[in-house]
Length: 320
Image 1: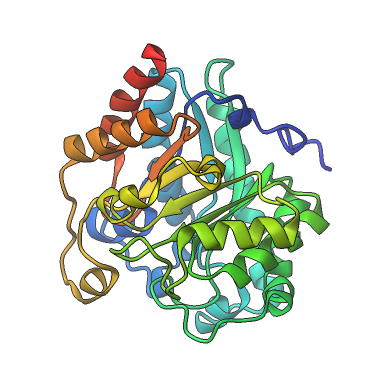
Image 2: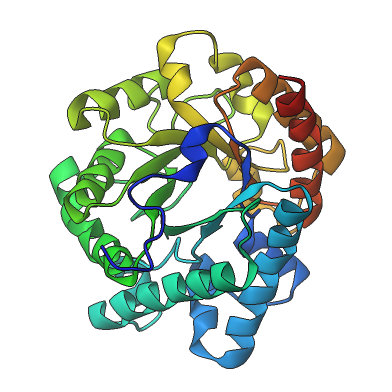
């Protein structure tokens, strides 16, 4: 463990206190900040000083909300697309990809150094996305192949001193198992975030309950916690009952839009939904499932949504 991995041995969000994270980084950078992100690759902005400054400004909008509300913050690196196959599409070699992942984590460390306070601890997380499309599982890898594929990115995060790994928009259990195994071998805690369709099931058709239980059984409850992302709360809220598996869900990064994945993929515009309404939906979920304490956004969300989510859920936690 490097000195910069401040929380790797004990994640502060495990205490149950509210932690915010950012919103839909790619949709914000494209539709609101005017950047061209080929293949949704936010890490591509690290190529020059202007891009790095834009990324820092992006995160600082959310950090300001967390600090104002005296909440913790998860600094999720802009590396959802920074794996070998996606990097190759942009001309990055394996060495280039390892380097850009380390550089992304260093940016998160720099932000923590500038902004962390005792009231707002900040966890540095290395973000991993799916090998394939986030909306379509395509040809599902074996867990062994997934572990081998994601090992490069996980290793770069460990070397750079990340506190943890978060696998976001996982479409299938095999890939989640592979990432969990790679993270365990690198000595990194891992959070697994599954995406679901409008029926609350994974894009493979597997139920969210079955996916979480499968990963837990195969890895011996390897993930620190699970999350749900890239779906509107109305798509999954009815699937979350009182069963034991739901208590493994510790975070949400919902879409602003109620559109399906296919509708979002085909849409030329950004559906930002209603930030106040989204905050209220988070509040209801947190009230029903008080173990959920890591709160952020996904497609279509920005700092306005996170501000409403923070306000709504802070009231619930304080009442509890």
